[in-house]
Image 1 (cartoon, rainbow over the protein chains, first blue to last red):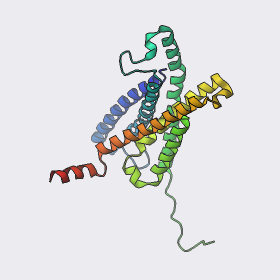
Image 2: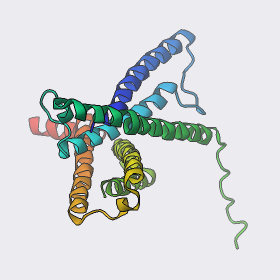
Image 3: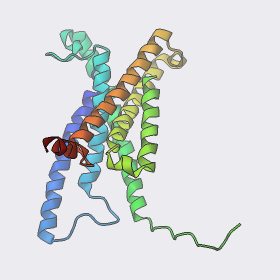
Image 4: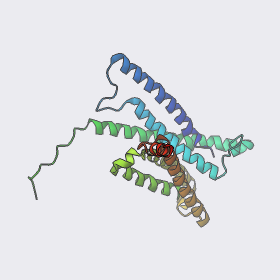
Length: 136
Length: 105
């Protein structure tokens, strides 16, 4: 009914956090004159921006799905369930269970991706294949 | 069906992103974020529905399946339109700017 509101709220928070971290990184970079972006590590702001990308993209398309099913409307109070208190209780329950699980799973997938991408960046480049040798 | 169609779109776009430098330059990654994000969220939704309905989840009514498929196609189309709009506004290749300046002259 309104499960997408939980990841959408997380998306708003992560966008604000990413902007704050980016400005902090720029300040630190200016003070120390050392570039925050090193070859083997992504800046934290970029990592958080990726998470907000997943959250905005996913909750945006889910909002469209809810509009399709008539669960939200473009006019106030926006949630169709808001007209009935008993339906609103169901919507809150769905937000607490399905919505929270969605936000947690997206964040977990992002965390795994972040760890993997850090490992890929740390990986030493492979030696180029020998030319002319080892032909089977 | 919505989950399946979005997941297939996510996989195709990811392959395109990985294999084509031109696609990466055109910010195809935006569609990856949208489709993967939505797929993960719909997966959670599907798991909760499976918990409620059990095996009945895998045998939906024909009308529901058609409606869900239509929704899935519309979702992919919406994601593509959002990407296209973003790409034209950011204009990474400078094509729009070039076309506009050519018209002016």
